[in-house]
Image 1 (cartoon, rainbow, N blue to C red):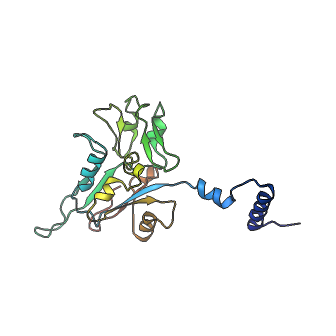
Image 2: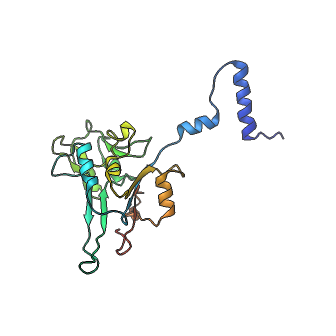
Image 3: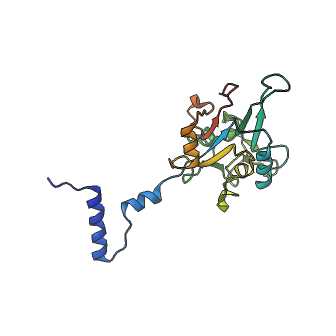
Length: 225
């Protein structure tokens, strides 16, 4: 029985294309073009100083009004005695869950996962403000935008910085490089290498949400669950 290797098959297809004069793409090219991105972020709690520059940058870049926030930096109780006290800083924002409950419960399809990037976002023109997504989110990171009257949250600056080929505003603003962002499906990306080379945790993974926000834990405290 004649065997046909992947290389021979691709070569044969190329020969057919040359003879027929019809340009076609190789399988390798097609696979590369259909490869999906899964954006993720790492918050290094050992590097974060709680300056909240990320919060300010997010608010300015995405026109987030006062009274609501797409991300928060939460400070723990102090560890140690004065004057040698230390604090743990925890990033609370959308986890961009691969299995997002907010998407499952949305009755209008306003809450969705971008199939090209894995980013969880909201179609404002479809949102009716029912707040089902807010109620079901286990991370409590969604809110009703006081001006648009629709659900809102972190979207990794999908329609602002990312659309301009830049990193999310919080990443660009962080003075200690405590935030790393990129494609987890690319094993050579900075974010994938960061996760691989450091002890990391994700919150509430027992719920099956498959969050894409990773944390490098502050060594003196217990990782948040």
